[in-house]
Length: 209
Image (cartoon, rainbow, N blue to C red; front, top):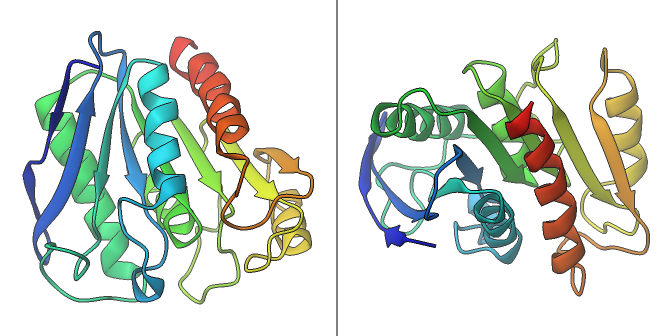
């Protein structure tokens, strides 16, 4: 890894606190969305951190950021709507700094839902959703983003019902790639390395496509 920066990005509700990690050779860029702001979710969450590591493994510069009202990010919680705008602002900033490089959206739990919404509104190369919070009450797109899409779900998740995620994914057309990890809970305790490898393999194929 050639660098780590903490730029302040101007979002729609004020400045966003970020961590940008840059590989030696950059093949793409990625936005990582963290879990629920009202349940102690931040950009330093270990699953969000693992998603960033998986990106760096594939020479993708990884931008994590705190949603509005979290840490030093300005603004206040907005039920997923404003947080999606934050993710879009992060993507736009990356596009300005690294024009013509493929973009990836990734997120965990609440952040997975935000990443899906962002990918439906901003051109990207690939999408990764880990334990997507499909039961939350802010709208998901009626049509799935038409990019390679990986969903990773633990079948012992105590917060996001695995069966609900499977049913929801099966209703999508043409449908994402769904990987269910056996005996894995919501926070992927003891399973972060397999998660990193799984996401990295998917991103390698998506970026090279």
